[in-house]
Image (cartoon, rainbow, N blue to C red; front, side):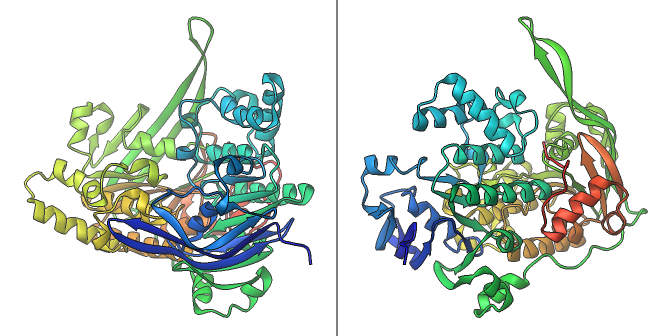
Length: 542
């Protein structure tokens, strides 16, 4: 038989901290053949990413160790290679797409420089060759008008665009093995389908293999040849994808397959108290050129939008990456300048100064898309959640604040005993729950939820949706729920607006939008979300 391209043999990973050792991966074994895609599936904290990072020895050594195992690639044990040997493999024969692009891309370098650096280092290209190849890669991963993006910095791109840049960098050297750690987490449904098709096509054309880490079982069904199901650091079931989905043997696998956000929100109540309104909200970013940097045009990220969010109800905002969803939310929360009238709880907050807005922040909270970027790495979880209480409720004693922190962590399904750890010690899904706890601990009236479930596995998504429903019913919270995951939006939102290129193309009760969409664009989004199929031609996210 032909030897596998990658063979993980009896791998264990342990982390040492403060005199104690915990096992994150426990005697895991699997092979990846040439041209094959193997998916590692499991809930947050199951050991998927730790296993993948071990392949290229990207864990924080010496805190991380391997009590057992070998990782054989091309006849060599990668765990035994020195730094020089690893450099010949990393970024060349094996590349990796990380889960959180904002923390993986250099914020000080343009897209041209970051992708070009990979091409120059590994292929010895000159400036012109590197630029031409960079444009090809950006176009391949679905970025329209790529030349205009060459001089952009990561913060000037949407979450989906940043992830596509990461994919372009990983594919630049046409690797033998691509490790993809949640590569479509930040992408909207239509682009997700396009990226999966792209990866599948490149794999077939180049004979490339993939190790695909994900919590989205719909993606696994579409792209993987074989599946390894992980929980608590162990592989509990493995086999061909069709067999695993058709006849799962392990209880945990059956649990995963049955997990998805369920239920429907109550019908919209037009008589409920209005908490937030926006009228003719506009956010235009100037395009400046020339020596004197004169404004020659504008990027109309939000172009004259009206919204109303009521107490105890959820307004879902959907659309492709770059459609203006997050920009609209930030404008309503007064995090960025905008034109138009914005009223919160009967007050025109568009006219309030920064200092005057500070007193309203307790009632108006945000859960951001990227939990790793929004949580301070220098603060413990307890300190992060307490920070808002210290500012807005200074009369609370330390013991009272700690009690509120414990209650908030329990509400979002985290063990309160972990509150003295730091964000990097948690999985992506756990970090997002910490971010939700930080917002909810202040008991706000309005919460902007920017992709709050994008980093969560399927079963935790369902739990968080149930949690948000419960909190909303208990406290009469108004939610602005921004997401590209239409399944989650359908389970939570009473009303929906569909955005494209900064404008609303369709709006109304959620049931009507999902059951009887009026525009081709909305139908394309729904088709891609609920049928796990390739996005229709002409629907490309920016």
